[in-house]
Image (cartoon, rainbow, N blue to C red):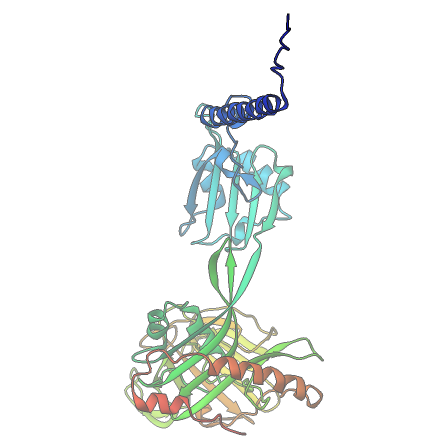
Length: 445
């Protein structure tokens, strides 16, 4: 009998087919499993499902402010530190102890109307006593008074950042309004008036005059707290350009404003004892007196301004009189040197005393109408070598120029600032005359 050989079911072809099928099945299983995981993630794989991220506390004044109930306020006229705390139940003895233990960082006598404060309470409504009193005399500085533990009180400053900004404008009515139209700080108007106090009469500014300014602006917590310093300026007035460049001398470390040739913009005397004013009566040898109704000499210049306007010393010097008289009212007299003396009459009150040394621009009193006066003004009198003269007709020497050994450094700085000024578009320059004036070369001195 012939025996038949059995067929081998595990042939190589069959073997490799099984391997391929196994791999394919495994791949499908892995794919399905991964899709399931992504579609239905387990709690173990996603810890955020059960553990929410805790928000970071907001820290201000060194305190987690969102952990307190905060009441903000502004100091009112005739409001005092003690009356504020008394309103919130702080006893007089506790206030006295608080002042004694914090006198190195806080003087409540320096608090003034308009300053801001914040009082911190616990979020627990069952606790009514305030925990902290935070006082801010300005946007940068603050004082934190711990009402429960005064010894843990402290003072601090917010970090300040600076940015270089530019602004320009053609004057249509006033410098203030033009800056406001450009959404610039009105403080720039006052800064420009101070810089050009010796060269430009800002009450004679006319429509069509224009300016360009490069300045540094300060920010606290990404909010502007105003311009810090004007770095350079170009002011077109009366058919003439006036440049101003802030430069800090290496020899003295003191900064000042100079023209493009290094000459100081500061003169020995200010043009007037007020920042903003109008002249109501000039120096005259024969004027009809409005009260006495007689013709007589008026050897002063009257500057009208609202009651309480600060009166400034027009130059450095020593106060030789700070007193009251029947006709002059409250007045201050300053000897500047052996040649010049000035006097300021009809003050509402005086801010300096006899023998005190004062600096140019320092507040020496406030506009009033004491003595023989019809309304609030300051009568400004000026002596040269013992003789009263008209201050508006005097030609005063300038302050010291940039030293010769710093001229090269100064002119490099001026060149850089001139380039910056030239690149500022003149906003509002609609007329051809203004545009042409802007292209005039700088005057050479």
